[in-house]
Length: 499
Image 1 (cartoon, rainbow, N blue to C red):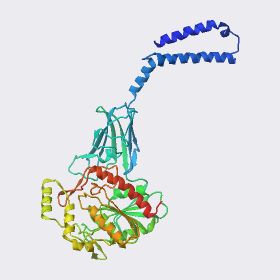
Image 2 (cartoon, rainbow, N blue to C red):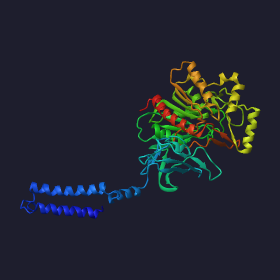
Image 3 (cartoon, one colour):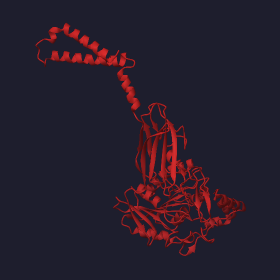
Image 4 (tube, helix red, strand yellow):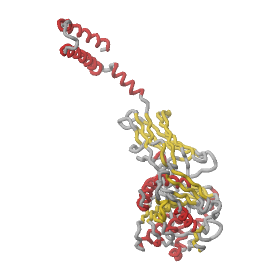
């Protein structure tokens, strides 16, 4: 029955009602009479009730149902990305609403790095019965990663080179999240990734070389961090900025070679560089005296462990894929990497077998990946008698230790090399806390924080013209970064006793 017919039927019934009750309708009762008011509104309620009953109950394809159906069809998919400005390493939520049950949609992420290269990822999802997709709880049907993984679209981004140079240290300040339906772009949202969150920066050239970051809200002396890079030289400004922003501690990115005024190669680096950094930080009014955390990666992790064994002002050490054994430097001659008071530390040489040398030359010629870890294992085997002397006397430290050494590290066997430190601490009944985190297939950790691409498992060494492999897998490296990042922050808070 059409709406007009329904309305006509109600009018006829109304006329019959009025005729039957003519005396009532024509009664001189005042307009505000309870009886009159009650009956007038009663009829209105009856009118609306019958109208709704016929519209929704009697009509199988009534106008109201048609309107609702058309409204549902006109609702566009909604893409929600939160937050849209986020500190590197912090979680990001992506959701899609207003879909049909079981509808297929594709989410892509893209960004351009500091070298102009384009990084992308994508995943296709099937909407739940309520018409939503949530990457924190839904696994993709297909795409650049598998399984439920809130960070999956970020770590699985792969590089499409636009030039000659590619780096695993991709710096992308802006990411674009796009929702695709049936191959058609529906909506996009941008994510601004920041490393500097309410911090002040001071560039330093004397008496130390580096960059100092101070959280803006700090007015009282606070424990400070010192960040040490690896064999790449210089200082890691971005990493230090993220740490300062996350921990809200004063943070110094310290260079120890590779810049003006410093040694040009990683050879005979004086540990007085660390002493100068400690002295400079102790002079800063917002830094708590003699309460420092050292954070180092690879050879920088080796330096952090060694420095802690000499300087009691160091109270906490974080080593990303470090070594508890001192190795020779990287440069033009066989010599120690480190010295103190003019004396070089005992060290092991990096030796290479005939087989490994053949593999190196092939990788150099063909542009394939070369894994250096077997050379370190060979070196340990060939110099067993010298290991005790080259092992860092870490028991002399006053610091707590959190080391991350992974099996399948392609650069060097960081799990084995880290264990030399842990074993030595255990043997000496070390009174402070120490822990070794190991992640299968985590590889050599150049990326310390989550929600960051880990798909590029190699880096180029221009001095020897070879690609060195990091080992591990992109997924497991991302999982290692996600778990260890949280534990590193908790460790620094706990051991440096900061609020």
